[in-house]
Amino acid sequence: MNSTEDIIILAIESSCDDTAAAVMKNDKVLANIVAGQDVHRAYGGVVPELASRAHQKHIVPVVHQALKAAQVEPSELNAIAYTKGPGLLGSLLVGASFAKSMAQSLGIPALPIHHMKAHILAHFIGDLPSKPKFPFLCLTVSGGHTQIVIVKDPYTFDVVGETLDDAAGEAFDKAAKILGLPYPGGPLIDMYAAEGDSKKFKFTKPKVDGYNFSFSGLKTNFRNLVERERRRNPAFIQENLKDLCASLQATIIEMLMEQVKRVAVEYKITEVALAGGVSANSGLRVRLEKEALFLGWKAHIPPFEYCTDNAGMIGITGYYEYIAEHKGKLDDAATARWRIE
Ligand code: KG4
Ligand code: ZN
Image (cartoon, rainbow, N blue to C red; front, side):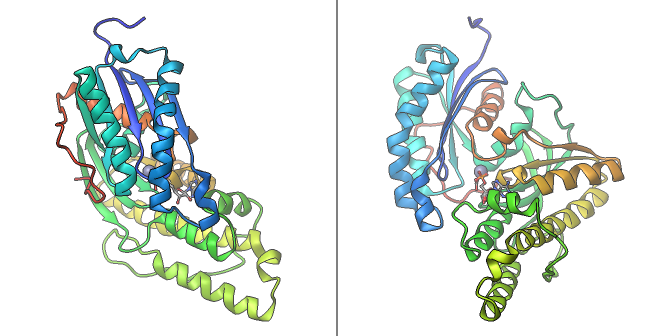
């Protein structure tokens, strides 16, 4: 039973290849449903046209399932939050159009949400045990983004460093593709890395200005090594898969953590969080915990269900937007590119 003061929000996420819906009661997640899209596996990456078609197929059942699991009727909703961007335009359009039409038919606001803010604010989902204290540093690492963000409050995000080319998730996925692993390769590299020797192969780390990152050189370096060795030994990948994964993963983690440590010192911040799909990486999670212990930081690592794309994170961000009375407009358009600041 909901009291009249409770804020009930339906949240929809469709920025890439997951169709997700969640129902929030204030800052708590009542239901969190995600439908993935296996259709992209055969292509080695997300095919935008296939993604939007799959969103169209999944959106009604996913929303229905979320409302049913939460035991919430559409008439009880106070607002519908949806991912406005950044992401694949065709995919975003499906969620945005659905959310705005449903909100209009119910006479409630549709709240446009920034996908990367939502990854960060997932830390504030009410059911989670520890929440970062403001200001905190957040390393946001996903398939499309890699940024170091100083979060001053739930509405103020300063990007102090970001990738100049590929995102960390892309570095994992592209390396996995070179190894012949299916998309998305990040979780598979993580799995094989757990049993490999991370010191077996050395990759050069680029020199990058400021607190930024660059991963495209690592990908080229990785590809050159694999191609060179395969010319000598066609079974090179099979024989060295775990060590290749472990060495690559260790290099990516080192590149990320070097910059995080520099920013933490510069900004005198000891609350350090991870967000985005790559924060599911077990090596990165362990490394952050270790650094935190060593440097006296408080580490904040989201549970797996709130690392990769989900609608719970859109719901908590919608909750903050709702209480700040930031209501969306019917002509808010899905936006493929959108800065977090
Ligand atoms: O946040 P997300 O689900 O979608 C985007 O907003 O991009 O992130 C997806 C990315 C993919 O690149 C995927 O390979 C990576 O997160 N990823 C991982 C792991 N789980 C997901 N990368 C490394 N290790 C993992 N365990
Ligand atoms: Zn994401």
